[in-house]
Image (cartoon, rainbow, N blue to C red; front, side, top):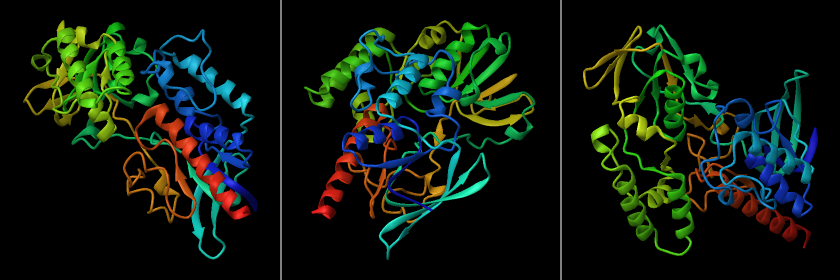
Length: 382
């Protein structure tokens, strides 16, 4: 049995940021991680050409900036180096290969009882914590939608977390399902490596340049969001033209408002739109069913593919181990309260990085949580 003040579950950017903020107040904590490394999503499940989609000033963790020599849009390798330097600076030492199995709140003792598994030793580890921080992220488990006939597909079907490069798909017909930033960039990467790429785009999306996103996020500090949206949409139409004839519809809500209200981000174009316009990447609508290597779309088209790649995101797994967390998380393991009041539940329970606000949202959550824990400890001592 290990008694701790704060237990942080997860050593991705969210857990590391929380640990650093607690360190600033000299509040002791233990951070546990089920993988054998920190930020496993970035180290093990990110494709080779990935860069941070936002400018570096919007992607800093608390209390440490990027080096001045870092490019505006930080590549995967440099971001991992930043996280390693961050851990060294704040002396963050996660307990790796420690998987939390359950956590319950003891009303009598006013503390959290956590049962974890030491994966390497195959033993049970018990923690008693005054404060519990859920930092396991919204990207905990692969999300693959149910598609009629998927089990019959005779080719390769993988989630984007297993995709590294388009090299091995050269000359093959590949269908990318999912039109967020990952899906659009993977389709581009596949086409550049000689694959016959198609992408399913069902819902309306905003497609913008990274410079426009940076401008919008900067202007949002000074102008109403509707004015910023009007400007961004006008410039987007000037740059890309009418994309509806290429199968890309624009949402009725502006890009900044959409992000603020729903957490849905605009897609940052890396060259995909140009390839779509030239017919190198084909846009498809909703899938009706899969029959062997044939994918039938609701349009009636039937097209053979060698591979299907699911860029359909991830889901939170917090509800699989967190009990008594109904005050903070819903059935999908996401916050019940709307941003920016989502990060705090009852009984000294917190979550960080679950509001779909990226690294900037993680930084804000971590600061709020550390401030709140500090105030509670101060009141108890007082």
